[in-house]
Image (cartoon, rainbow, N blue to C red; front, top):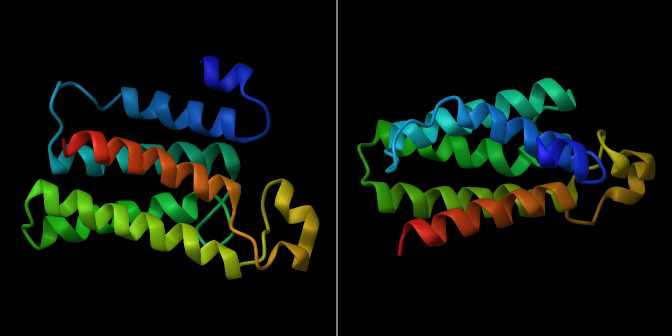
Length: 140
């Protein structure tokens, strides 16, 4: 709730909603690949509901959705958790970097119109940094 009510801009409520949704599905101290997929799906659902955004609109979802898809692909290919996390981080980085060539259609950057092209989205970057921090600490 602190994120929702105290962090400025749209990211506070969006991350706050994501974390509230995530808290509904976490029940163990150690997370499996299935748990991480459930968590990512809940985060995406919360962000989409509150932010009314989809992939390709130059938002944090352009990082989070590819990361989640990577986790699902890892499960489908029976990859171990460490490999899945490394693949997830790579997908998140690629999603973040792909926002550079996008035109923002949501959030404050949307007011820039075509001038938003050529700049990495701050929301996508912050999402990547959260994912990166989680994964790096999980792999220790």
